[in-house]
Image (cartoon, rainbow, N blue to C red; front, side, top):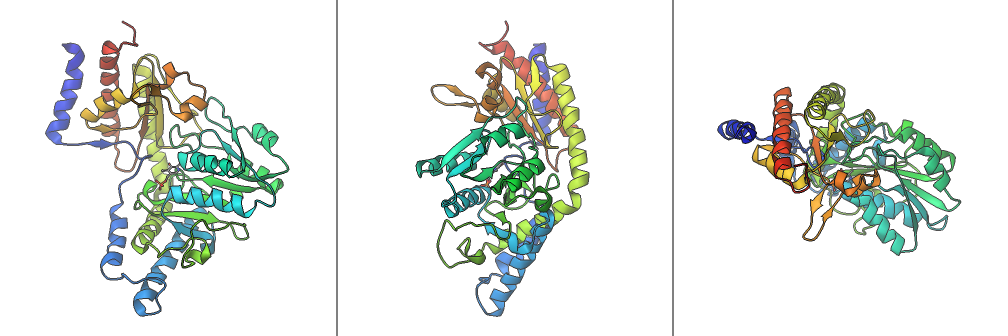
Length: 403
Ligand SMILES: *Cc1c(COP(=O)(O)O)cnc(C)c1O
């Protein structure tokens, strides 16, 4: 059974070494050891409430402000423009609801893209029910928002543009500086979900001219359940939850000091290592891309060939169902992701793959590999072999496939 031998060999290697290879860093990243180390004292010794006036409170407050400075530095913001939230989802909710509602007297039109994260798209649905009008910009087949399309969507009553920096599925990086320029020229608030870029590629809020920008801790080797919304000084935004008036009144709730300290440390580490790490990951990414595309027939890369995240690959394989491929890879110790989800009745393609124009037969066999700090050249080679073997095996069994 030569067909199965390859996959069998890999399985044995994996089981003997008990090594699993994590290649799903767009879903979440492991906590950096330095981050954990920085956080621990804030669970054990420095547990004060940052609002308290005693020394315990002052210690917490000091750590809070120190983290604010570190995050501001990473994105070239002022510390007073950094607001802590519970993560990327909350930051997106706060930005969209907070800016839309506060600026409602000026207009009720919002522009976003059709490939945003659900944390944007689902909020837009709610806002639409509350009387806002939302335009969803189409994208090119590489996943880019076109500036001319954006410009022609702008109306007199447009109050907010929200375009993500890089897409979490296909990795395409949008021309944020140009979008920021257009928004500024028309005096429209501009928000960007930069959860996938902050810590991976340089993000400079001043040069982009962005008014609000979302960050999530667990996407940059920080903890889960902590995030940041950058809000440029002077931007009109209202809070979406009421309480004790923390975070300058924008986000009430006792601050998650260990999480905040962790995110601050993660931001500091990212700032120091980002350039070298992104070069390393780009080389690994391209190595794996070449292997897969050269070895597997009827395979292709979704997303933009060059304007893409250094760690992202999104492959398409004809005659394959993405979830089956994931399970095969998982059995070989490789953790990845797919854009196709098999619900009970129908195969549903990701909204992103649909938006870049893939027909169902081309979007069902998608595989997202997102590399990270732990991945080596050996890992990438093993992943390439595992993908090749799995695709061959699945195609042999496939009802869709060539016989
Ligand atoms: C992960 C992610 C989010 C959500 O962040 P959480 O911290 O998990 O809530 C939002 N947008 C993008 C692009 C993401 O990748």
